[in-house]
Length: 487
Image (cartoon, rainbow, N blue to C red; front, side):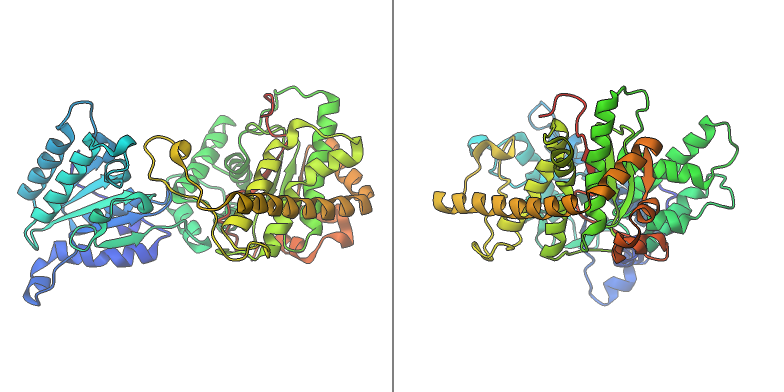
């Protein structure tokens, strides 16, 4: 898709300053190639943008073209693969022919892993259409004369599955990581998106930025848009902080489903379930602070306890993960304590706790018995699904030990959580009662209920001068998982 000259510049890109710095060199080359040619330097032919979905990889590529004032040709990796043999390869040829005629320019291939996956990994190791397309792409990239002025940029969130031939110097020899933004980046992104929307003076974008750990640029754009939609629905002319907070909760925890009917018994059970998560989340010193607890059904959950980390986190000690498992099982333990029975509501919690324990044992070396050996089998050289031909690289005895260690870790945390809930049963009942009355309580309100029990890490949440971030993959705890029959 030829877009001609694009109007996007680096001013429209926020939250990834390092990535921008890396790409300034490319812009300089496209503007003034002679400066590099006279000294004998060769500019990279290909730049691979690597990062999770929604971090702005396509936007950055457009901004490079916009800054340099050159044409921008974009195509998705999946556009090359058709049912007719040879179409993909001929499309690659056409794309590069067109680019060479209009040099200097940028060719952008989005989701390059659709064509650039490791060759020979098809079912039966056959040579398929995708491989032919990739071969043609490799040939075209080698066929550039040095300093011809065509720069190929590509984006992927799976650099690990790409063919090594694509990544060698002379093809995509430069990889630029575009990660989720930190708290300053989030605020800058919010400012860019908020320019188009009338806000009241009480809106604090820095507060929103601190309260959105792990959000990508796309998530933040969605949050601002949701807030504008809410304000418009209410007939307001401007967006207030209340709409911003409501939109944040919607993005974090899913949309409210107030029309969803719950019997009084189900509502009470959900209140105790969420109270169990919230109480353990407050009592345990290494757990993330509780941000909000609700028994209003949201998304597919009957209730949600949302926990947000306090600072930009990139690595966590085993104590944090132990507490995380304990908090995840809090709902199950609360139901067991109050009703002497459990429900299907804890299915997601059990899955989450087991996954953490498995990764502790198999990937993070947090088991004394098994030591620091990686037992996870992340072999993705598979045609359709991951598990179609997964092989395990350890013995049956080791597999039994892994199972025993996972069980031991979860059982230890169940024992710890059970003891804490029994000891503070009065507080558990008070939180549940408050939830039944108000339906939603914030972290600050929880601190008031628990008084001196609110641990130091919980109190910090009420001081908004701390930045938040969480790269973990299980931020919320769905109490009462699926209203549909639990799996």
